[in-house]
Image 1 (cartoon, rainbow, N blue to C red):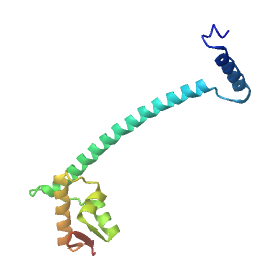
Image 2 (tube, rainbow, N blue to C red; image 1 turned 90 degrees about the vertical axis):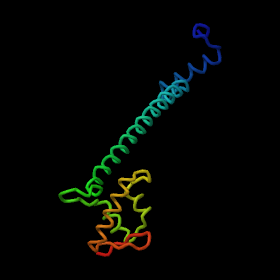
Image 3 (cartoon, rainbow, N blue to C red; image 1 turned 120 degrees about the vertical axis):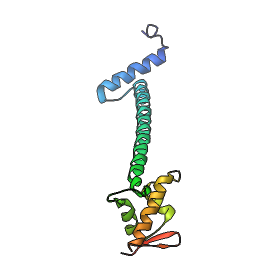
Image 4 (cartoon, rainbow, N blue to C red; image 1 turned 180 degrees about the horizontal axis):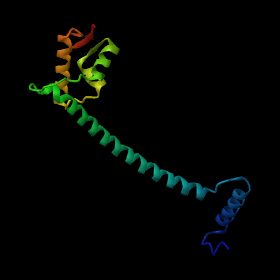
Length: 144
């Protein structure tokens, strides 16, 4: 029987014993566990790749949304109500005082997003004109 299975006698005996034990108490033979582990590893890699792709898409959508929301503050000829960033106001209120770099980090704005940074600066200037915040060197402080 070992010759038919193309295995030596000791490996054949071990596989028969493992299969018999598996039938009795749920023991999983080594070769089946190894196969299952390889299958799970490949599935895990596929899922990780999918998550990375989706994170990239979400990041791009968020950057596009920030650019869209920044547009009213970048256009001097804009007519209508300019919606201020609720995240900006919440970040300053929650911290009480926050410097410019930390504020951009809290808002998820990257250094290469120049238009969005200009929009945030414009919003900060207008909030300061309204007496809601004040500039303190490099930091902004909520005073209202």
